Every structure is written in structure tokens, then in C-alpha cells.
Image (cartoon, rainbow, N blue to C red; front, side):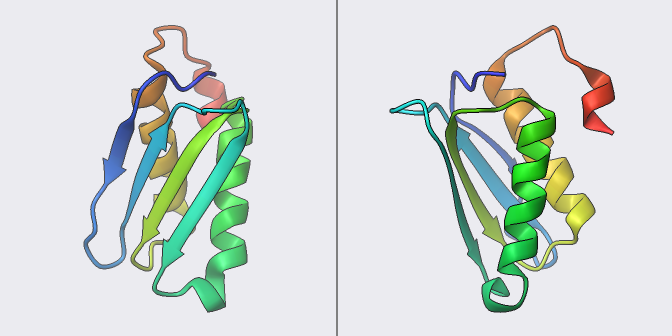
Length: 98
């Protein structure tokens, strides 16, 4: 999937996160994570984000995550939602979202 516009998903409430996606300027995939628990869970957050992007076949774009202590399931859901809003595609591979 190719991200064609900026999109957001989530909130900045406690135990949630805000995910912003934007088109790539150089056809690279850049993931930026800001979190209150970055030192303890930064690697896990990035792993979940990158796995989710991989399942959605996102190869380029900017993904910014503002985490407030969200669980892995919330991270996956917010990344999926932001990407789906940013790609403007009607042909979705729903099985990739499980």
C-alpha cells in the first residue's frame, strides 16, 4: 500500500496512542516513536508498529507514534486505522488485518 495523504488515528489519553502517517519524501519507511515508556518498551512498540506495517505492505512513508502506555492490540489497531485512512484504497486485503 502507498500512503498518499496524511492521516491520524487515536488519542493522547492515558493508555492510548496517536498515530500519524504521511507520504514518504524519499520512498523510505521512517518510524518515529515518542513514548512515556520508551526506555522500558520502546523496542516492543517499534516491533509491533513495523510488523503491522509489514502485514499491510507499507514500504514507504513517515509514521509518527505518540504513545501514552498503550497495549500491543491498541498499537496494531491505531496503526492499521491510520494507514487505511492514508491510502484511500477501496481494495483492502482484510485477511492481512487479523
